[in-house]
Image 1: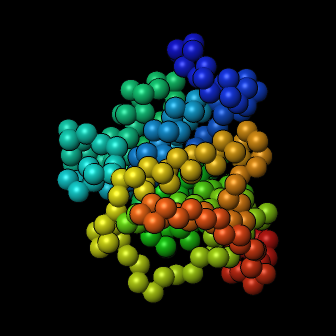
Image 2: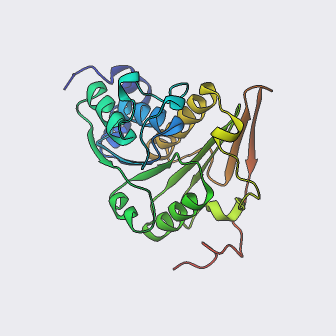
Length: 239
């Protein structure tokens, strides 16, 4: 343990808030562009444990935006990210699951204090939303494409859930289809991890009942307020 590792952060947050962070377990679903960046940022916070889940291996097209070395090529992304966390902060416990998140594998995330969604498809986010509602685990939705990105924080049964405002897209574009900038994923990852700090240290996430949207090419940054949907299929009636 490095005694002064978090000194600059403690100057800003205070000892009590740093102690709160040191007790957290953060689940990260998806270890690609946003996920690999968010995982490394989270590891620097001084949290207790990170649980990683992803089914993909590193390929050549990942290197423009994902936190991997060329020597990581063809490694499972969860293993490559876990190794980097261990080198960056050996005080953080890391648990890696090389598998797809679904309602069966989600049991690996049951002890998470919060889940960071870093996936790239609507159906997985529905599974995350339903799991987090059932387990009352807060989660932060994040996505990025082209020069753009979005973030929203979901507090089960208190804020609007993902399904209150996010409808299934008619044509779900991917990074492979549309392209993506590393600056977009890095910015969104930073905002996503900051929401962890905002929620657990200050009790005031910026994007609960709200959607953050940005476009780095146009210089657009906006906060759109969203409401709970009284007819939401997921959270209209508490189960």
